[in-house]
Amino acid sequence: MSTNVSKAVVVAGLVGAGAYAALSRRTDPAWLRTNHAGRTVTLYAGPAAVLGAAAGTAATPGPARGRAAGVLAVLAAGGCGAYDDLVGADDPRRELRGVDGTAGRGRGGSGAVKGGCRDVRRWQHHAL
Image (cartoon, rainbow, N blue to C red; front, side):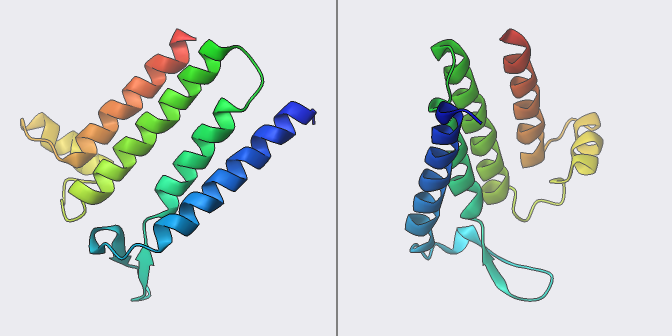
């Protein structure tokens, strides 16, 4: 593994861990869920992972245009995931199965936004 790639991995890990530590101090109930075992869990790992991945992508060797597209794709995907987690938390149409069914009836839930984001990520991948 090259030194530059190793640096990007370290940057991603440090930024992700730092973001998670900072976010975990918050107690906003919108970011908390009850899991299958009845324990309260946080959704802060998602945004922390997105920030770490974006930072690692920015630190990766290669053309600036490619790094910028990668950072944009990571942040867009993370934004869509956060939107789906927060806005669609109690929406029964949230699952992809529900998205397809409700879209056919002229309605959409927060999962439809996530589906649209998936299409944007595909477009960005092919634009490079």
